[in-house]
Length: 384
Figure 1 (cartoon, rainbow, N blue to C red):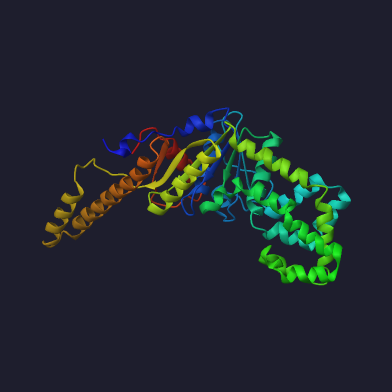
Figure 2 (cartoon, rainbow, N blue to C red):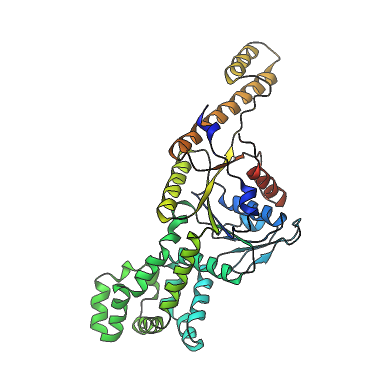
Protein backbone atom coordinates (compact mmCIF):
# COMPACT_ATOMS: atom_id res chain seq x y z
CA UNK A 1 0.00 0.00 0.00
CA UNK A 2 1.45 3.39 -0.99
CA UNK A 3 2.09 6.20 1.45
CA UNK A 4 -0.73 8.16 -0.20
CA UNK A 5 -3.20 5.47 0.95
CA UNK A 6 -1.86 5.43 4.51
CA UNK A 7 -2.12 9.18 4.89
CA UNK A 8 -4.19 10.09 7.99
CA UNK A 9 -7.27 12.09 7.07
CA UNK A 10 -7.99 15.59 8.39
CA UNK A 11 -11.63 15.80 9.49
CA UNK A 12 -12.35 19.44 8.63
CA UNK A 13 -16.01 19.40 9.70
CA UNK A 14 -15.06 18.06 13.11
CA UNK A 15 -12.49 20.86 13.42
CA UNK A 16 -14.86 23.71 12.53
CA UNK A 17 -17.80 22.22 14.46
CA UNK A 18 -15.84 21.66 17.66
CA UNK A 19 -17.04 24.30 20.15
CA UNK A 20 -13.60 24.19 21.77
CA UNK A 21 -11.97 25.44 18.54
CA UNK A 22 -11.97 29.24 18.59
CA UNK A 23 -9.05 30.16 16.31
CA UNK A 24 -7.85 28.61 13.03
CA UNK A 25 -4.65 29.99 11.48
CA UNK A 26 -3.99 29.16 7.81
CA UNK A 27 -0.33 29.41 6.81
CA UNK A 28 1.76 28.38 3.81
CA UNK A 29 3.84 29.69 0.94
CA UNK A 30 2.54 32.15 -1.63
CA UNK A 31 0.03 31.11 -4.28
CA UNK A 32 -1.16 27.91 -2.60
CA UNK A 33 -4.70 29.10 -1.85
CA UNK A 34 -4.49 30.19 1.80
CA UNK A 35 -6.96 33.05 1.33
CA UNK A 36 -9.45 30.83 -0.48
CA UNK A 37 -9.04 28.07 2.12
CA UNK A 38 -9.57 30.50 4.99
CA UNK A 39 -12.67 31.98 3.34
CA UNK A 40 -14.10 28.54 2.51
CA UNK A 41 -13.58 27.32 6.08
CA UNK A 42 -15.20 30.45 7.50
CA UNK A 43 -18.18 30.19 5.15
CA UNK A 44 -18.71 26.49 5.85
CA UNK A 45 -18.47 27.03 9.62
CA UNK A 46 -20.97 29.91 9.47
CA UNK A 47 -23.41 27.88 7.39
CA UNK A 48 -23.11 25.08 9.94
CA UNK A 49 -24.15 27.40 12.77
CA UNK A 50 -21.06 29.18 14.12
CA UNK A 51 -20.47 32.91 14.40
CA UNK A 52 -17.29 33.45 12.40
CA UNK A 53 -14.96 36.28 11.47
CA UNK A 54 -12.25 35.76 8.84
CA UNK A 55 -9.19 38.03 9.00
CA UNK A 56 -6.91 38.33 6.00
CA UNK A 57 -3.41 39.83 6.17
CA UNK A 58 -3.00 39.52 2.41
CA UNK A 59 -3.64 42.91 0.77
CA UNK A 60 -4.98 41.24 -2.39
CA UNK A 61 -8.69 41.75 -3.03
CA UNK A 62 -9.55 38.08 -3.58
CA UNK A 63 -11.28 37.59 -0.25
CA UNK A 64 -13.51 40.64 -0.63
CA UNK A 65 -14.41 39.75 -4.22
CA UNK A 66 -15.23 36.13 -3.46
CA UNK A 67 -17.51 37.19 -0.61
CA UNK A 68 -19.30 39.83 -2.67
CA UNK A 69 -17.89 42.78 -0.73
CA UNK A 70 -16.72 45.98 -2.43
CA UNK A 71 -13.79 46.26 -0.03
CA UNK A 72 -12.37 45.06 3.26
CA UNK A 73 -10.75 47.15 5.96
CA UNK A 74 -9.83 47.02 9.63
CA UNK A 75 -13.47 46.74 10.73
CA UNK A 76 -15.36 43.41 10.46
CA UNK A 77 -18.08 43.60 7.80
CA UNK A 78 -21.06 41.26 7.55
CA UNK A 79 -21.15 38.98 4.51
CA UNK A 80 -24.61 38.72 2.94
CA UNK A 81 -26.00 35.94 0.79
CA UNK A 82 -24.86 33.28 3.23
CA UNK A 83 -27.24 30.40 4.00
CA UNK A 84 -26.72 30.49 7.74
CA UNK A 85 -27.74 27.73 10.08
CA UNK A 86 -29.36 28.75 13.35
CA UNK A 87 -26.95 30.87 15.36
CA UNK A 88 -24.50 31.30 12.49
CA UNK A 89 -22.96 34.49 11.17
CA UNK A 90 -20.07 35.54 8.95
CA UNK A 91 -17.93 38.71 9.05
CA UNK A 92 -14.79 39.48 7.08
CA UNK A 93 -11.98 42.01 7.48
CA UNK A 94 -8.47 42.86 6.28
CA UNK A 95 -5.64 43.92 8.59
CA UNK A 96 -4.77 47.61 8.44
CA UNK A 97 -1.33 47.58 10.04
CA UNK A 98 -1.12 51.33 10.61
CA UNK A 99 -4.62 51.64 12.05
CA UNK A 100 -4.08 48.69 14.39
CA UNK A 101 -0.85 50.24 15.69
CA UNK A 102 -2.79 53.48 16.26
CA UNK A 103 -5.40 51.56 18.26
CA UNK A 104 -2.68 50.15 20.52
CA UNK A 105 -1.33 53.65 21.14
CA UNK A 106 -4.80 54.97 21.90
CA UNK A 107 -5.42 52.11 24.32
CA UNK A 108 -2.23 52.61 26.35
CA UNK A 109 -1.60 56.35 26.35
CA UNK A 110 -3.52 59.31 27.68
CA UNK A 111 -5.51 61.19 25.04
CA UNK A 112 -2.97 64.02 24.97
CA UNK A 113 0.02 61.68 24.77
CA UNK A 114 -1.72 59.58 22.10
CA UNK A 115 -2.25 62.69 19.97
CA UNK A 116 1.45 63.52 20.27
CA UNK A 117 2.52 60.03 19.24
CA UNK A 118 0.09 59.67 16.35
CA UNK A 119 1.18 62.99 14.88
CA UNK A 120 4.87 62.18 15.31
CA UNK A 121 6.70 61.63 11.98
CA UNK A 122 9.08 59.15 13.60
CA UNK A 123 6.14 57.07 14.86
CA UNK A 124 4.37 57.30 11.48
CA UNK A 125 7.39 55.82 9.71
CA UNK A 126 7.84 53.15 12.38
CA UNK A 127 4.19 52.10 12.39
CA UNK A 128 4.08 51.83 8.60
CA UNK A 129 7.39 50.27 7.65
CA UNK A 130 9.42 48.79 10.49
CA UNK A 131 10.29 45.14 9.92
CA UNK A 132 8.02 42.92 11.99
CA UNK A 133 5.31 45.52 12.54
CA UNK A 134 2.81 43.76 10.28
CA UNK A 135 3.25 40.44 12.06
CA UNK A 136 3.06 42.08 15.49
CA UNK A 137 -0.11 43.90 14.52
CA UNK A 138 -1.60 40.70 13.13
CA UNK A 139 -1.15 39.22 16.61
CA UNK A 140 -2.58 42.38 18.17
CA UNK A 141 -5.67 42.27 15.93
CA UNK A 142 -6.19 38.57 16.65
CA UNK A 143 -5.99 39.33 20.36
CA UNK A 144 -8.47 42.19 19.98
CA UNK A 145 -10.96 39.97 18.17
CA UNK A 146 -10.64 37.20 20.74
CA UNK A 147 -11.09 39.58 23.68
CA UNK A 148 -14.28 40.96 22.14
CA UNK A 149 -15.80 37.49 22.51
CA UNK A 150 -18.22 38.31 19.71
CA UNK A 151 -17.45 35.30 17.50
CA UNK A 152 -17.31 31.55 18.10
CA UNK A 153 -14.52 31.14 15.57
CA UNK A 154 -11.78 33.39 14.18
CA UNK A 155 -10.12 32.25 10.93
CA UNK A 156 -6.80 33.97 10.13
CA UNK A 157 -5.25 34.11 6.67
CA UNK A 158 -1.52 34.86 6.85
CA UNK A 159 1.08 36.51 4.58
CA UNK A 160 2.82 34.35 1.98
CA UNK A 161 6.00 32.32 2.44
CA UNK A 162 7.88 31.96 5.69
CA UNK A 163 6.85 35.41 6.86
CA UNK A 164 3.52 33.73 7.67
CA UNK A 165 5.16 32.44 10.85
CA UNK A 166 7.05 35.62 11.64
CA UNK A 167 4.30 36.58 14.05
CA UNK A 168 5.74 33.92 16.34
CA UNK A 169 8.90 36.06 16.55
CA UNK A 170 7.21 39.44 16.28
CA UNK A 171 6.65 40.15 20.01
CA UNK A 172 10.27 39.46 20.88
CA UNK A 173 11.60 41.29 17.82
CA UNK A 174 9.52 44.41 18.30
CA UNK A 175 9.98 44.25 22.06
CA UNK A 176 13.75 44.04 21.73
CA UNK A 177 13.61 47.10 19.53
CA UNK A 178 11.37 49.13 21.80
CA UNK A 179 13.20 48.50 25.05
CA UNK A 180 16.64 47.66 23.74
CA UNK A 181 19.87 49.54 23.15
CA UNK A 182 18.67 50.92 19.83
CA UNK A 183 15.81 52.90 21.34
CA UNK A 184 18.15 54.22 24.06
CA UNK A 185 20.54 55.35 21.36
CA UNK A 186 17.68 57.02 19.54
CA UNK A 187 16.82 58.89 22.70
CA UNK A 188 20.43 59.76 23.40
CA UNK A 189 20.84 62.31 20.60
CA UNK A 190 17.68 64.06 21.67
CA UNK A 191 19.08 64.48 25.17
CA UNK A 192 22.69 65.33 24.36
CA UNK A 193 22.44 67.72 21.45
CA UNK A 194 23.49 68.08 17.85
CA UNK A 195 27.00 66.62 18.02
CA UNK A 196 25.74 63.38 19.49
CA UNK A 197 23.02 63.31 16.88
CA UNK A 198 25.46 63.74 14.02
CA UNK A 199 27.82 61.12 15.44
CA UNK A 200 25.00 58.62 15.83
CA UNK A 201 23.61 59.32 12.39
CA UNK A 202 26.99 58.83 10.79
CA UNK A 203 27.40 55.53 12.70
CA UNK A 204 24.48 54.07 10.79
CA UNK A 205 21.05 55.38 11.67
CA UNK A 206 19.88 53.91 8.37
CA UNK A 207 19.90 50.41 9.88
CA UNK A 208 16.57 51.09 11.59
CA UNK A 209 14.68 51.01 8.32
CA UNK A 210 14.99 52.63 4.92
CA UNK A 211 11.62 54.27 5.39
CA UNK A 212 12.85 56.28 8.37
CA UNK A 213 15.17 58.26 6.12
CA UNK A 214 12.05 60.04 4.86
CA UNK A 215 11.66 61.82 8.19
CA UNK A 216 15.24 63.06 8.47
CA UNK A 217 15.39 66.79 8.78
CA UNK A 218 15.69 69.66 11.22
CA UNK A 219 12.88 68.32 13.42
CA UNK A 220 14.28 64.83 13.81
CA UNK A 221 15.67 65.40 17.32
CA UNK A 222 12.36 66.67 18.59
CA UNK A 223 10.44 63.85 16.87
CA UNK A 224 12.66 61.17 18.36
CA UNK A 225 12.59 62.71 21.82
CA UNK A 226 8.81 63.02 21.80
CA UNK A 227 8.42 59.43 20.63
CA UNK A 228 10.88 57.96 23.15
CA UNK A 229 9.45 59.90 26.08
CA UNK A 230 5.89 58.89 25.17
CA UNK A 231 6.91 55.28 24.66
CA UNK A 232 8.02 54.94 28.27
CA UNK A 233 4.39 55.16 29.42
CA UNK A 234 3.00 52.44 27.17
CA UNK A 235 5.62 49.82 26.39
CA UNK A 236 4.45 47.48 29.14
CA UNK A 237 1.07 47.26 27.41
CA UNK A 238 2.72 46.33 24.10
CA UNK A 239 4.61 43.41 25.59
CA UNK A 240 1.79 42.23 27.83
CA UNK A 241 -0.73 42.06 25.00
CA UNK A 242 1.72 40.32 22.69
CA UNK A 243 2.46 37.71 25.34
CA UNK A 244 -1.25 37.13 25.87
CA UNK A 245 -1.82 36.55 22.15
CA UNK A 246 1.22 34.28 21.91
CA UNK A 247 -0.22 32.22 24.76
CA UNK A 248 -3.53 32.09 22.87
CA UNK A 249 -1.74 30.57 19.87
CA UNK A 250 -0.38 27.79 22.07
CA UNK A 251 -3.68 26.89 23.71
CA UNK A 252 -5.82 23.94 22.54
CA UNK A 253 -8.52 26.35 21.35
CA UNK A 254 -6.21 27.33 18.46
CA UNK A 255 -5.50 25.12 15.45
CA UNK A 256 -2.97 25.72 12.69
CA UNK A 257 -3.65 24.54 9.16
CA UNK A 258 -0.68 24.39 6.79
CA UNK A 259 -1.80 24.93 3.17
CA UNK A 260 0.20 23.64 0.20
CA UNK A 261 -0.10 22.39 -3.36
CA UNK A 262 1.53 19.20 -4.71
CA UNK A 263 4.73 20.95 -5.80
CA UNK A 264 8.18 20.44 -4.33
CA UNK A 265 8.76 24.05 -3.27
CA UNK A 266 5.35 24.41 -1.64
CA UNK A 267 5.66 21.13 0.26
CA UNK A 268 9.21 22.04 1.33
CA UNK A 269 7.75 25.20 2.86
CA UNK A 270 4.95 23.14 4.39
CA UNK A 271 7.55 20.93 6.06
CA UNK A 272 9.23 24.05 7.45
CA UNK A 273 5.92 25.25 8.88
CA UNK A 274 5.17 21.86 10.46
CA UNK A 275 8.61 21.67 12.06
CA UNK A 276 8.51 25.25 13.30
CA UNK A 277 5.05 24.87 14.82
CA UNK A 278 6.23 21.74 16.60
CA UNK A 279 9.26 23.56 17.99
CA UNK A 280 7.05 26.37 19.30
CA UNK A 281 4.48 24.03 20.82
CA UNK A 282 1.73 25.30 18.54
CA UNK A 283 -1.27 22.99 17.94
CA UNK A 284 -1.19 21.71 14.35
CA UNK A 285 -4.48 20.39 12.96
CA UNK A 286 -3.06 19.17 9.65
CA UNK A 287 -2.22 19.90 6.03
CA UNK A 288 -4.62 21.15 3.36
CA UNK A 289 -3.32 19.84 0.02
CA UNK A 290 -4.89 22.05 -2.62
CA UNK A 291 -5.28 21.61 -6.40
CA UNK A 292 -4.70 17.90 -6.40
CA UNK A 293 -5.23 16.15 -9.73
CA UNK A 294 -7.28 13.01 -9.22
CA UNK A 295 -6.70 9.84 -11.22
CA UNK A 296 -9.85 8.84 -13.09
CA UNK A 297 -9.74 5.09 -13.60
CA UNK A 298 -13.44 4.53 -14.17
CA UNK A 299 -12.88 3.75 -17.85
CA UNK A 300 -10.04 1.34 -17.08
CA UNK A 301 -7.65 2.95 -19.59
CA UNK A 302 -4.14 3.41 -18.22
CA UNK A 303 -1.75 6.19 -19.23
CA UNK A 304 0.26 3.84 -21.43
CA UNK A 305 -2.85 2.44 -23.11
CA UNK A 306 -4.15 5.95 -23.80
CA UNK A 307 -0.86 7.02 -25.41
CA UNK A 308 -0.65 3.85 -27.51
CA UNK A 309 -4.25 4.25 -28.64
CA UNK A 310 -3.65 7.88 -29.58
CA UNK A 311 -0.62 6.94 -31.64
CA UNK A 312 -2.58 4.30 -33.57
CA UNK A 313 -5.43 6.70 -34.28
CA UNK A 314 -3.04 9.43 -35.36
CA UNK A 315 -1.68 7.06 -38.00
CA UNK A 316 -5.15 6.90 -39.51
CA UNK A 317 -7.21 9.66 -41.03
CA UNK A 318 -10.37 11.10 -39.54
CA UNK A 319 -9.70 10.24 -35.87
CA UNK A 320 -7.97 13.43 -34.71
CA UNK A 321 -10.57 14.23 -32.04
CA UNK A 322 -10.47 10.76 -30.49
CA UNK A 323 -6.66 10.81 -30.50
CA UNK A 324 -6.63 14.22 -28.78
CA UNK A 325 -9.02 13.00 -26.10
CA UNK A 326 -6.83 9.99 -25.40
CA UNK A 327 -3.75 12.19 -25.07
CA UNK A 328 -5.63 14.54 -22.74
CA UNK A 329 -6.63 11.53 -20.64
CA UNK A 330 -3.00 10.38 -20.51
CA UNK A 331 -1.86 13.86 -19.42
CA UNK A 332 -4.41 13.91 -16.62
CA UNK A 333 -3.29 10.50 -15.40
CA UNK A 334 0.34 11.63 -15.50
CA UNK A 335 -0.50 14.78 -13.52
CA UNK A 336 -2.41 12.76 -10.92
CA UNK A 337 0.47 10.30 -10.53
CA UNK A 338 2.95 13.17 -10.17
CA UNK A 339 0.83 14.87 -7.50
CA UNK A 340 0.55 11.69 -5.44
CA UNK A 341 4.27 10.97 -5.67
CA UNK A 342 5.07 14.51 -4.57
CA UNK A 343 2.57 14.37 -1.71
CA UNK A 344 3.97 11.01 -0.62
CA UNK A 345 7.35 12.64 0.06
CA UNK A 346 5.68 14.91 2.60
CA UNK A 347 3.83 11.97 4.13
CA UNK A 348 7.04 9.98 4.53
CA UNK A 349 8.66 12.92 6.33
CA UNK A 350 5.55 13.67 8.44
CA UNK A 351 3.54 10.43 8.69
CA UNK A 352 1.40 11.62 11.61
CA UNK A 353 0.18 14.88 10.03
CA UNK A 354 -3.47 14.55 8.91
CA UNK A 355 -4.19 15.67 5.35
CA UNK A 356 -7.28 17.11 3.68
CA UNK A 357 -6.84 16.67 -0.10
CA UNK A 358 -8.70 19.19 -2.26
CA UNK A 359 -9.28 18.30 -5.89
CA UNK A 360 -8.25 20.88 -8.48
CA UNK A 361 -11.19 22.82 -9.92
CA UNK A 362 -11.46 23.66 -13.63
CA UNK A 363 -12.00 27.38 -12.88
CA UNK A 364 -10.88 29.95 -10.31
CA UNK A 365 -12.97 30.60 -7.21
CA UNK A 366 -14.57 34.03 -7.38
CA UNK A 367 -17.88 33.85 -5.50
CA UNK A 368 -19.70 32.23 -2.58
CA UNK A 369 -20.71 29.18 -4.62
CA UNK A 370 -17.06 28.56 -5.44
CA UNK A 371 -16.14 28.88 -1.78
CA UNK A 372 -18.90 26.42 -0.87
CA UNK A 373 -17.47 23.91 -3.35
CA UNK A 374 -14.01 24.30 -1.83
CA UNK A 375 -15.53 23.80 1.61
CA UNK A 376 -17.27 20.65 0.42
CA UNK A 377 -14.02 19.29 -1.00
CA UNK A 378 -12.17 20.17 2.20
CA UNK A 379 -14.66 18.18 4.22
CA UNK A 380 -14.85 15.25 1.80
CA UNK A 381 -14.37 12.12 3.87
CA UNK A 382 -13.14 9.68 1.27
CA UNK A 383 -9.55 10.32 0.27
CA UNK A 384 -7.99 10.49 -3.17
